[in-house]
Length: 510
View 1 (tube, rainbow, N blue to C red):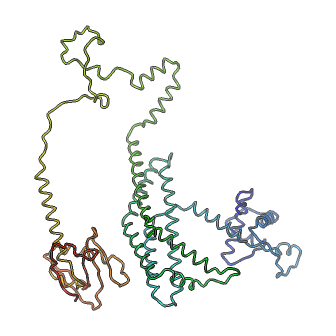
View 2: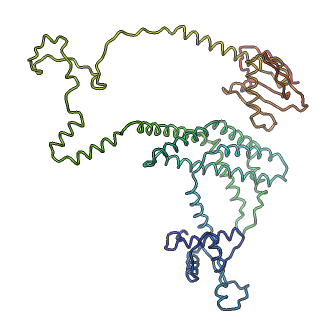
View 3: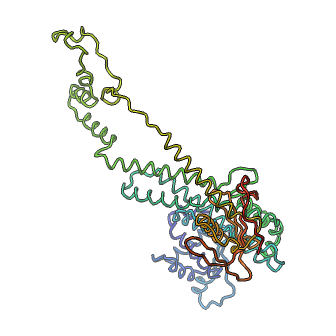
């Protein structure tokens, strides 16, 4: 199928197939000799091509079953030359379409670098929420279900392909050698920043998609696929019914989605594996950058030193010079402990040979650091009891303040925001944080926005008021006026955030 890419005139064959591909995009299914020549100029082929050479290229493509040739009996020919030029009509076969698509895909893969896009994760979650809403609508929404399902599959395919391409580029970057150090350092530094930005809230986005998958499956994914099949309006074909293959393809795509975010067998979702890969890549890149920076600070590296020493060895004229260079390079000189003396030098005459003199104690520290021990007075151990007591007291005070804040904000049901009225400044800050998290979340199926605190202990459910009332919250520093939202603040899971302390706010819903 791809033989045309490996023969002598591969460029011409590729340009001819590309011309047929462009013609197909303009709904021209068959081209004559003159049409092929005109299309060649449109795809960027500037070299002159003789008629016989173009005929030979077309015959070769027909022989390789990439083009089909038919006689055009619908034309009126005035001369034999005109008949010869316009009689034969060429069109792409299925093999030709596949070969052209394969070459284009290969060129696209070579040109792309891949990317980690959080927008794709958000788009997947949005399409899943849209499927959940469409499942409750009548049969008139089948076409929208089909288009939404195909958009979801397209986003998943983009996530998988971009992730594979980016991971491949990342691994090649880690193995890159011989590049300019300054460019190398800038590229790796930018890659570290890119990975760190991608990892922000990656776990939360993955959990949102997994929750959306569960909601869709509760509505019945098999029913959605059947409705999407009706909305696809597949054309009739000869032979087997294409519906079974289409449904099987949709089922396989859905299993791929579950493998990424909510596996059936309890295995780790692939999105978490991507999290680990990104973290390991950041560590590896930072280590490489540290080695590069360290080598730039040094005047020369050990590798360069040994290479220079090898040149000296190769240039040494005699064996005596080699031995002298070896002794000089690798420290075969006087011992480091030669300067040490006996504790009582007067007991050892200066004329006595070193072989007969009593031994001198040598510190083991000389071998590793070149210094001897210095025995000094042991430092006094610092008493940290007061510091520990102060920190413990501060921690207890912070826990008590946090408990008081949650006691003030905890509700036994949905209440109006105006029910809080006057709040302490610390409690007001906690309430503002909860409101901000809830307002930044997407509405659920029941139109309520849900969010949790950073430690996951407290949950808020917020709904917009339907009557347009206004709430006024007062603190020691002023008042806040805004919509009178309906809020329900509880511990995550439904129990009290602080069960050992009584709840002080028991207002009913306004």
